[in-house]
Length: 392
Image 1 (tube, rainbow, N blue to C red):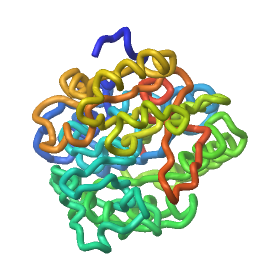
Image 2 (cartoon, rainbow, N blue to C red):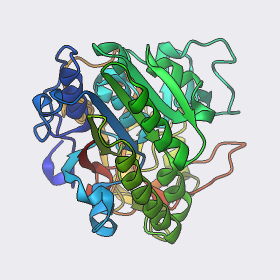
Image 3 (cartoon, rainbow, N blue to C red):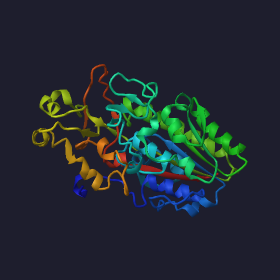
Image 4 (cartoon, rainbow, N blue to C red):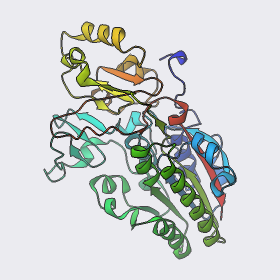
């Protein structure tokens, strides 16, 4: 994959969130992983802290923080930016935080994935089938079949805690990725920072705390990241963060704040509707997988040339077309030995959307919701996330 084709790409050699996890792992007595530590935050800069806290604010991109956060508490501790992973989406990036590996190893490649081993397309975080939204756990399927990496908490030499929404604290995904970490729930922003503060004050030995806040992302999807509701919520997070730092003063904690991805608002008419392209749809053997900004296409035998020609003739102004193996060999998903099912999960081709464009299909029973705010692609707004470090 050539540089002329993208505006941003992951820097797995020392500038990505997977490298951040390498720094945290080594600082807390874990063995070195397959990726080098983060250049901007070497392990020794964290090694002197008694506790390490990683706060993930879902969707808070570096460009957004730079544009609206000046003068605030988060901005005051901003050290720079990192790249996310590819694709720039929660399923892939949060799993990187929770395993310390890139999608190349953990194998989660987007919201919707074709799980060949299960014979279905599924939404991996809620662990439900796409068709019918049926619980896979309720069907007796072990969620461990989808991922091939040990939880990050199990790679550390210190106790670990995970602070997450109460409603997902005991979900299949949460249990799978927590490992031996203790899980703590919350219901609102005060409870979120309150749980972290409580754990720091009660800790009798060195520990690691991972804390995840999803509401910025939840608002940016329906309203758009440039909207007033998102800006208002950001202000609330920023104020709460400042109060949190005051409340944990003296706990000897290194508090790192970042995000899994940033956001891009899709302009009016930015969606490519698969239903408007019946010839393209006829070339596919499965629904579109991945994300609206990066769609994996499974092409019917004998339809390869027709598929390529149609995309080139009708969609080349709105997307780049890649053979999915190009993305793997080009290092977009990571470096090193791949997950054994990686090739199965990224299809035959990938449509990487340009500009403010997205592509969607709608299955029977789906509502056809088209979010304003999106992520998953290779724009700088989606790819770059902040590196914020505060010492308590």
